[in-house]
Image (spheres, rainbow, N blue to C red):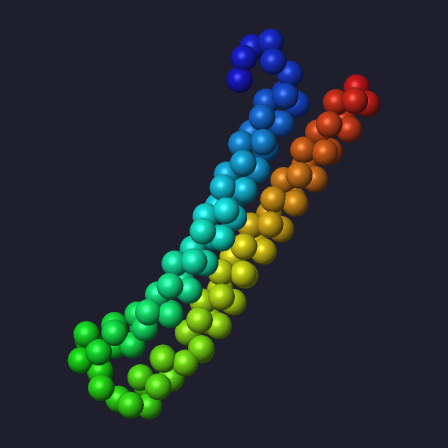
Length: 104
């Protein structure tokens, strides 16, 4: 913070940096989707279990199905929406700072 800089500008700059970080994380989560699809399509979970020496037909059938893909998709969407919600909070704080600066 510069000596002559108003506190509102300092806070706004900090919130802008936080918002940019959240947007970056949301994009990163979206970039994970093709990798997860490729891993599931290529049979990665089944290969991993076989590498560990697990030969249970019931477990291999469960992991081969769409259940792991659905679980990972739900987790990624939960994380994406959590970052989105936090970004909206930061946007509201930036808006509050803008209205307070305009009022003064």
